[in-house]
Length: 114
Length: 113
Image (cartoon, rainbow over all chains, first blue to last red; front, side, top):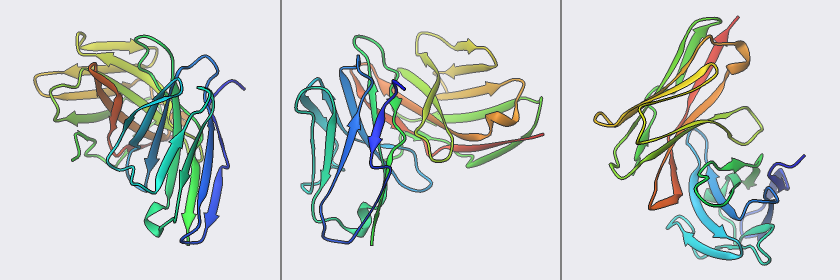
């Protein structure tokens, strides 16, 4: 399977705990994106990497959120001091070089904060 | 701010008939539009796209129409099949900032046998 993969698929955590999610993009893709999706809504853009550089962050990405892509391959999204409002599906997507605008999504990580 | 709107949360169609899903946008800087399909427990899957230099793009049973003056696009599925039952998201981006793609809230399509 050469698609985008995410781990874990589900995460239940208690409020105040830290969580980290991983995304492995399609291998030849240099762009990687994180989105958040809540019930009844479409995905909302969080942040974007081109290779290892984080080039853009949404205002939705509070100080408790941090994302990395250290070697330009896989990426991690960490949420510190989780709150119940962080409960959502976290989606990762990747896209290729040049003018290829189609983003290919992973299956997502569903986070539940209790 | 909801720059991409899908005003119909659900649509039910008989197998073999046409499904028409609609999407409106407000940002005139958007010039690239995409449709994604999402099954339960899976991420969105890219379906079809159109740039603002075109008003129609066709791929098999799927056709996307773009009306720039009305800031409206639609996805036509003909003929509809039960396997098309899914949530369909409309998305839009601007060439100058194609990394910030905005999605609509989605339309749940049910195709009845």
